[in-house]
Length: 154
Image 1 (cartoon, one colour):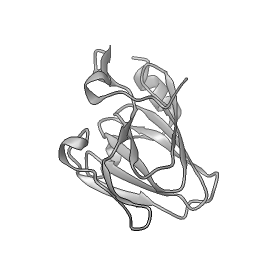
Image 2 (cartoon, rainbow, N blue to C red; image 1 turned 120 degrees about the vertical axis):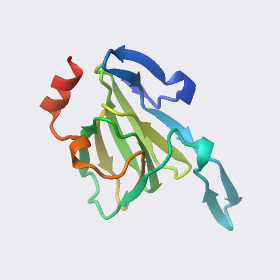
Image 3 (cartoon, helix red, strand yellow; image 1 turned 90 degrees about the horizontal axis):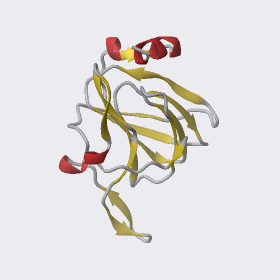
């Protein structure tokens, strides 16, 4: 298991299976401006993002230590940000590598490529924001771990 993986976009891609290009999750730092007395503005736009954003959603009020996620996507790419609090993420790639990440700064996001199983543990009063490459489509979800295992073992 690798902790705090940091791969530039052009290095994150490597072939793994004939049916999909292999991408690994990686941390992305967002530019910010401001100061402690005034606060900070974090900017995520255009070329600083790994994909065009089609949907934004956030999750708040999740009990501390609650584990959510527990799914993968066929095509959807995500950029997950802890805009407040701490998120611990375990992301499993199609080549069965497990990556552990901790997000605790709103200036950092985690890129999660398609076909990656994710489990997310929320800290107290954490707010998760997700930038997504597609609008919501239920058929894109891989809802069970056995289904994920079967898909990536092809």
